Image (cartoon, rainbow over all chains, first blue to last red; front, side, top):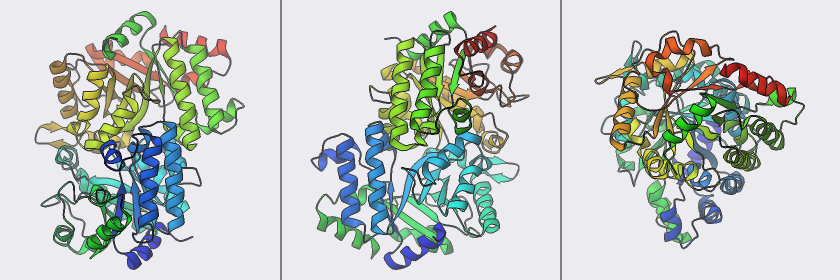
Length: 266
Length: 266
């Protein structure tokens, strides 16, 4: 195996910096003529992976759209993850987990190990402090996985927490700096950041950050691929752009899905 | 049906303000002579519900300890939730979910509806801003469920985010005030708060808060039942204290578990 960051860099250098968000929400399932059920969500997701798995660097399934159906939905998600593994694309499971101590360890066991829901990387939420996520960071380093910490999210309501200040600076800058330092210490750059692509200005400094930057909010939420260089400056080379609905709405036709992805990568 | 807040008040007036945390972590399963597996976690949890379900006001299963085993673990959690429903105690699922838009709606569908994982209340995390949780609040009001927003958590690392300041005041105080206002508007007090019982002082003002306060951190993490009146002042009447390991470690013997709960309620 190789560290998550290296594997990501390799696949991105071949396929380009695009991650397809797998968000099988009810209205989408209906538009595709699928039932609003665990089976429908699984079918939609596996179709996307089957059609696009050789073209994109990563998929980001959104756990909520599978949890919605309880254990049956989660069983479908396990099969989606297994399918992604077979394509050579990376799996980034969007779970936004965040807890403390042995509970955070249990989440690391769930998603960053050889478990049924084990993936290449997950998203985590730092409301309980960056340090509370340590069990996930340690597991990611040990198992060559990645952890994307929510930093500056794409939605307007995020600012009240993320741009608040403590004695060290803003909450988001604290997170960026702590992630940078941890990546420097561990050298494998297991810690990435989630930074929305919808903002006019980010309100934080990513110029020293040394890991992967996952950028949702492109397309449906108003962010544009062509604006990313201006928004991220030199750090744009670390950006993995997520497009969810913007891709999925082109489906289920396989050719239309592939054409959409090619257009985004152009 | 009756609103979550009313149902909680009724059961607490009969049984007292104790919620048993269901945290079947691996070391506990081993101590109980159970396998570290989905079956082991389910067996541990259902034993607790079976033995204590007539005595306590609520159970708080920790989702991470079931997700750890993938869909098989989540299937066990569904049966634990069904068992809790049969006892007359309330179910508060500790999932700390937090997302935006249609994703937050999907979490509300998963946990606050007539779904396999539907419970009386869940915990949610406000790193994306209090307003991002609106889909959960709306569902809770409509379906007579509760939503506990993480406010001031029990761990030391939480302060860097929760006690940070924006132009309106501290992050935690913003959350308390927004929850208070929402409960006033909707009248059903669907929004509760999570406030750790481990602190010397809370660093926030709960005196106007009008909903339920879920207080973890009692026992294993160092908080003490007898210190809650001093810590919470008049708001102590709204406190639902969570004891997890402090109870579970008395098991699996049924009589010892019941004796432990009686002692805590005394």
